Length: 381
Image (cartoon, helix red, strand yellow):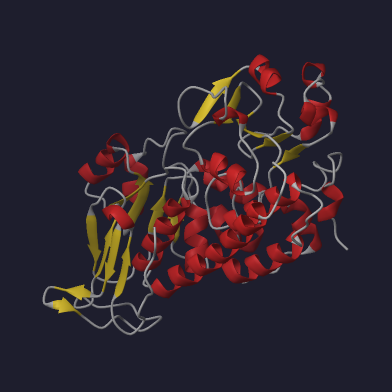
């Protein structure tokens, strides 16, 4: 997807190639109208229309001020686009847990006071709870069985898709920026992301040797699940120059996060293992279990817990550029990106907040990862 330049003085137009989403702001019945100046509430004659990833267009008379989010990345993404949590009304419990366990809760403590019972684990909405909040808009995954109960209750819904591509993040940012009346924010965030993407891609292209095999576990405790085809994790493993055994010569069947057994991992013998932030597993859990001792990643102590910042770095989100750099540094430790400085810069840009040394250690899991190879590169100093 290519997001067009946004004209702050006229009309916002953000188009996604192929027609998967289009975002139009400032379009009245008789044609383009001047956009509301920054900080204004908008008027009925300067409506904001947003077309979601289902291809459905909804129109707001003014920038939204009350949002319920159900997809897990959406709550923190809204905060990053909006510059605060004032317009967030409720979120999925997994979004709230990430805020509690990460640093979002300390940056924006009000967010931890919000309801987080608006959907089940599988995103089925609690319609009565959502309706009681009377939000301007509900953000939901675009599956019809998840959207229709909300719309049948008279709620306005924007549907999101996750195809495992960076274009989805760009689309989400553009939608959120448009509905909040801050179209310029979409341009800024995409420009930062594009710059980091190009840098990581260029570094990978310049390497003469093949990268390591990297296996990402979305779930480790209570049953293994790994990132297979059509996942964002597979995308960034390949972006940094690594290979994903789950999509290689002996791939996992199916798409998304797919269950597997230890025997399959032993056959792949990955050189690096990543533990996601959707359970409590840490590298020591693997190092101390004799079942895993013959795997290359364990013998070389290259098992790592993925960072958790304003949101989890493993799925797509506003901090994904930091994940790309972190993983590149893990896969190729001789070429360091200066990640701590990048985290500081990105957090100032996204949240107007510079992490403390303690917060950086928490974000990067420096304690949990301290026994893993080359992780001292992320220490202070």
